[in-house]
Image 1 (cartoon, one colour):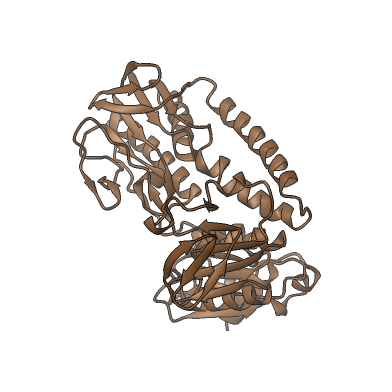
Image 2 (cartoon, rainbow, N blue to C red):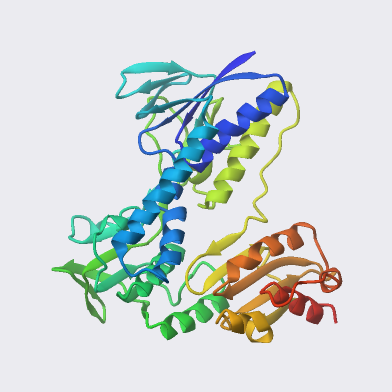
Length: 425
């Protein structure tokens, strides 16, 4: 049985699916003819504009104050990782072109002017920055996809949006010496998270010299000045970080849509049988590791469908969330509507003093059986704890069990044990 699979989008969702279906196909004696199409560079937004270059730049900005050197280093990292993806796809047909869904079984390649048949189509087109109309056609306006196009560090950078994208770029350019102002229309940073996180982060951002403006609307932008209801802010560069939207293709066939883009069922399938959507294009948790999870889940389900086996419904309840600002923020598991928790500040452990990372706290959320079901961390080294917390929560460990673990000293992980000891009392 030879099934023709076409994947549109070579970001983390697309290339992970293509690689995974090849591996699972071999295990189950199934052959697939796979074509992956992308009109841009291999690796998608995550590799070329998002996750990788931003985290690399934040790290480098603590040591290097030359933006062009950082960009050169980023390009080297991207090239290495792109080669890794190409190796992953070495037995898969890759086409650099723009794809159009011309029928329920056929793709048209715009530049090559030819058609490709498919049995299954996977749409993994990702997302793009949501830029409100007021910012259109203005000078020195950038998004997270284009900010690295600048060639010099701006003296004054105004960031519109106090979500995770805005906070990471605020950290980067604050490290590089820019005067940063964040405008957030809600009453606090990270308004989609709980109030305690936003308030803690606000205190630490102010400590780092970042100006914060809340609950003000932008009235107009003229001659590199942002006018809000109570402020006039001169800027050299303006970064719009007001969220992202799914990149929805315009097919030549009828596929049902809703506010999230293409309407899909619990198995990622659209109203057209055999056409699926995964990753950011679903507009459900726009994170790279969630996109990877989508890809692997769909690959397993397609194999199950072909073999007549039961399929798996994706479960996003334990998807971790991490913001690589300074300080970092980590959230994993169930942290809502739980009244039982333990909170410990990093001033309790020795390694935090060694790392100059005593700001912030860890918060473990517990169920009625004293199992850790969720966690929040705010700290300069918060992401260092994420692996341990994921394993603890996935394995439903109790505070007593965690307290019995021998944690190395001095490490940042010791704060998990400190919290667990308190929780076990």
